[in-house]
Image 1 (cartoon, one colour):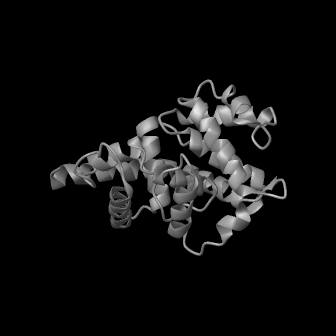
Image 2 (cartoon, rainbow, N blue to C red; image 1 turned 30 degrees about the vertical axis):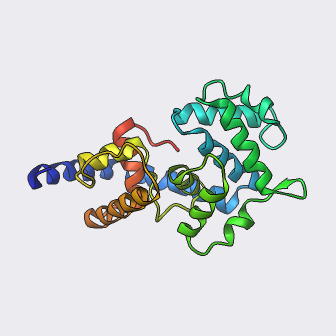
Image 3 (cartoon, rainbow, N blue to C red; image 1 turned 45 degrees about the vertical axis):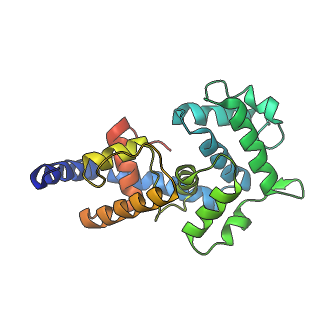
Length: 220
């Protein structure tokens, strides 16, 4: 992208940001409230949501999680029971198993205990590495998504297809990668971080801003 065109796109981005900044800040405060005031079940609900999102629509995944939770299956249901409530989610059989496996990891004395474990990590990147290593079905994108949704994602990026497409348009990356391994993810995240600093928009704000630019809404 030539410099003139890049400046034009960034100028457009700032115009959108000026219109949506308050809404973005409000949404991020809602995420932080889950960590500060929510229960461990609330936090686990966000984790279950992020386990469902690969190759599925975010709104459909959230509705599915609320359905599972509403039938008292999120913390008690078997994978077979859960999968029947995930009809609108792709690969629902596999993802139901992911939820059950994650639940086992955080069970303590028969109750979900996820906040104390995550608090052990002083660095959010270290926490993300642990999540990716220990949770089946959770890659860097999903782990970043989860941490952001519980108010811990200020310094990490959620590199989904919407964000990558816009990073390509903005000239932050040369092309959209077909796949993202750890090295590629961290490199693009760092490039996005540098870009955010250069244009004066916090990384966590930029993530939601680009999502809005692509989808027309600020969701989860």
